[in-house]
Structure formats: structure tokens, C-alpha cells
Amino acid sequence: MLESGNSLENMGVNQFNDNSTSHKWLEGLRLVYFLGIGGIGMSALARYFLAQGCKVVGYDKTKTTLTEQLENEGMIIHYQEDINQIPESIKKLEEGTLVVFTPAIPTDNKEFQFFKKKGIRLHKRAEVLGLISQNYFTIAIAGTHGKTTTSSMIAHVLNESGVDCNAFLGGISINFNSNLLLNDKAKIMVVEADEYDRSFLTLSPDIALVTSLDADHLDIYGDKNQMVATYAAFVDKIKPAGTLISKKQQLTHLNKRTDINYLSYSVAESTDFFASKTEIAAGNYIVDINNQTSITKSVKLGFPGIHNVENAIGAFAIADVMGIDKQKIKSALESYQGVKRRFETHIKTKNLVYIDDYAHHPSELAMCIKSVKELYPNKKITGIFQPHLFSRTRDFLEGFAQSLSLLDELILLDIYPARELPITGITSQLIADKATIANKCVVKKEQLLTYLSDKKIEVLLTLGAGDIDVFVQPITELLSKRVKVE
Image 1 (cartoon, rainbow, N blue to C red):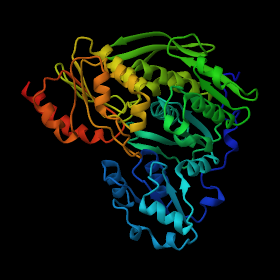
Image 2 (cartoon, rainbow, N blue to C red):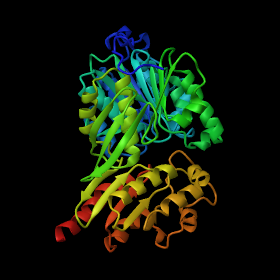
Image 3 (tube, rainbow, N blue to C red):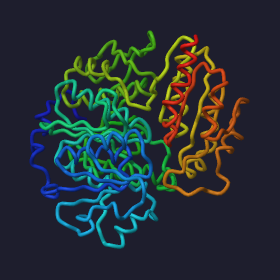
Image 4 (cartoon, rainbow, N blue to C red):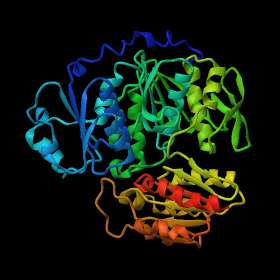
């Protein structure tokens, strides 16, 4: 087992080259084209290449607040499948060009088909991220849930503790106001390791943390056993003498190697890192964090949810392993503000609360709703949920119904298809039919605001990973009028 409190020098961080000495494949790169530039992971990569001085051009099917930000930063983006918009230098296979795509792009996309027929090589986002990470001491955060929060936490802790690092995040960090953190002096890279399409197998981390192994992406893996086997393959990618941090019960599935170090963490169970005392005061969690040799007392976490306390302990474990002073870790965790669309509170008054969350898996939904009920035990909780993917809805139908039945009132939107075609018979109404609460309905998106206008609301949640976020601002404006009346 690796002893906590190692110095960065002892961990070999200084062997990594300065950021100016990138891999040969990056040298001379002038133009990068992104097919699906508006995705949260793709946009971070696009921002990285723009910062390297490259011209960045891309396509996405929908104009969003994020793509508008990318355009304001200097990127050129179009929103129709249009081969004429692809730069000529890429069509002519000129040197210094790169095409990056997301697997979420449908294979019948006109531009995707053009690249394939012309023999123009497309690089997966994960492949490019893996190549970039080879130049850094890499900390990778994997797991079905909690990746974005934990990776943004550790990036914030390192940054606040004076440790230069780069970070590629799967959400917009409120502290950074971005999904990308760049530092010219960085020799450390924090990256969210995405299990979708086995993308994280392109990484070879020095430290890896696995948050959870709940079944997900069964459209890719087929069953949970295959998914867990792929996580084990991810663990095989950890560099010799590296470190794996995970829950104790998960280590039984992942502890297959003898040449790496293992550490466990938990929100309550006695492990290498755990919370020995947890209480709520004025809407904040106050926790004592135990490690192998000491207790860091009264860490004040200003973000709700017991699951986020566990994410904070995981981030604490990584920082402690890297030798960061525990009081610096405590201070940084206390100044962490969260990630947009991760339990993000938009209205908080005595009589009305509105929270938006990215939860799109039954376990995530249950954790989010339970956290809200813990904070507001005497309030009526209304949830608006947009299922994400027909296949996920089919695979976890019972789980969705059970988790959403924790609400007092459920409003369902139609399924967001993302990369999929509809599956016959799979609809949001199936979830409504199986939910055990009395107050439930399915509402069309175009009717949602009208439906909410006359509804009595005490605590409202919007939940989902599709395009439900486009309602956040309109709902905030609608409910804010009630606050003014009060």
C-alpha cells in the first residue's frame, strides 16, 4: 500500500516534460475540425487546441449556450450537416490538420460519411485525449456516477494548493467557469475517464479513482459483467507502481494486479479514508475525514448530498496521496463551489426552491431526490424528469420508476433520443405507469411552461442529461415572478 503524504517529486511528477515539448503528432498542427463540437468533452478538447494556437472549426446539430461561448472564443461552428462547410485543407489531406469526432455522432451523418468515403482519418475524442495525457502525470476519475464532481474537486484542490495542473472536465466547474483548466507550467493532468464506448481505455493513468460500478451503458456492454470487466481492463492501464482508489467492495472486482497500490474510501465505512463524523448545520455538511494516520476535523462542505460528501473524501484521498498539506486540502474543499447542473440551486427562498441536476440513471436520481428530502423534509418535492436514451429507459425501467416514486409529484418529458433511433413501445408513459406515486403525468416539452404556470410548487427539481437544460432559464424566470409577488 502506498503511504499517504508522498512528495510530488517522489511520485515522479518531475520526470514529465514541460507543456512546451508536446508529442510529435501535435507539432505543426494548424487546424482541428470537430464533428460534434458542442459535447461537454469535445468542447474542452476544442478549447485546448484553440489555446495551442490552432484554428478550430466544427459542426454540431444544435446551437446551445456552450456553442455560443465557443464561437465567442473564436471557433467557427455550423449547425447543418454541410460538406461545403468542411475546410478545404482537411478535404485535401494537408499536413497540420486533424479531425476529431464523438461516437455520439450517428453513422449516417453526411459529414461523417464524407470523411469515411474519402478515407480521411477520424480520431475519437478519447484517443486524442489519451495522446495528450501521455505528456503528463495523469489522474483519471472513472465510475458510473460522480466522475465530474470528483474530477472538478481534485482539480480545484490542486489549483488552490499551488500545484499547477491541467484538467479536462465533463461539466462546467463553477470555480473555473469552464470545463477546461490550463496552466503553462503544468506537469499534472486531471481527466474525467468516460466508460462510454470504452473510451477510458486510451488512458494510462498514474493515479486512478473509480467512484462506482453501477450498471450503465448496457447498449455498449450488453450486461454488467462485461462493463465491470472493462473497468478491470482500465485498471490494467494504470502505470506500474501507480495507485487505484475505490470503494472497498469494488476493489474485490478490480484488485487483480500486484504491481500497483490500492486505497479505499467511504462516506461511513471504516476504510483508508472515511468520514468518522458527519452532521448538517445551516445547509452545509460538516465532516471529520480520517486517513490512515490522522483526522482532519470539521471540514465544511457547502454543496448538498451525502454522495457529494463521499466524492469529497475521494478527492481528499488523491490530494493526500500526492503529499498536499491536509489543511490546504480542507481549505480548498471548503471553497469548492460545484459544477453547473450538478445539484445547482437557482432559487432558494423560504417558500420556493428550484434545483437543476444532471441525474439520468436510477441511482443518481435516488441520491439526488433523497438529498433534497433531507434538506427540505417538510416540503412537497416536484420533479421534472427527461429520460435519456431509449435503450437506457428500457434497461432500467423498474429502477427509474422506483427512484422517481421518491418524489411527491412527477412530471415526465418524452425520451431524449441522443444518438439513438426510437425503440418501439419504449416511452416515458411506461415509467409513469410503473411509478407508485399518485401525482404523475407526461407533458410535452412545448407545453411544460404553461403546465407549470398554474401549479403550486414548493421545491422543484429538473432532472436529466438531454436538452432539459434549455428550460432552466425560462423556469427560473417563471418562478422568480412568484418570489417577487411573495
